[in-house]
Length: 168
Image (cartoon, rainbow, N blue to C red; front, side, top):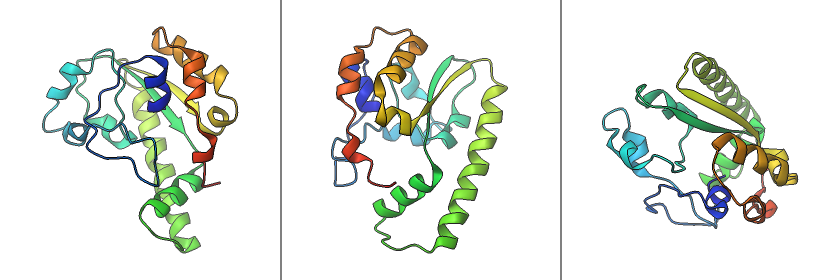
């Protein structure tokens, strides 16, 4: 998503501390300060009209005195777990362990979904990962409309790399 937004012309807020690697050859587009938002949210002053990558569990830490637009990537949890296991170098995690992690993720995501619904300062667009990979144009158009930003949809679509979908 961050690659798409950047290619489409949206400024991204990143510190480029985490370098590209085998798991993510195009880079991570992360901002280390996001992890410490609860203690220090000063980075938000530079974030207006920028895309910022954030895992769902850190949404709770955002100050409530601002408006947020969230592109919530929805991916098959089995793929998420497999991807994380591969990035951690675990070549053969047990099926029981994978199921346990999927259940934890499912519970956490349901909780954050419910929490977001109760917040008027959060607008959320759920983005189905599989559809984004297979047919990015309609979703890129939805994102452009949702963000109210003049994104270059063709450039966004060109940034999608289906070869990176290695965990199926």
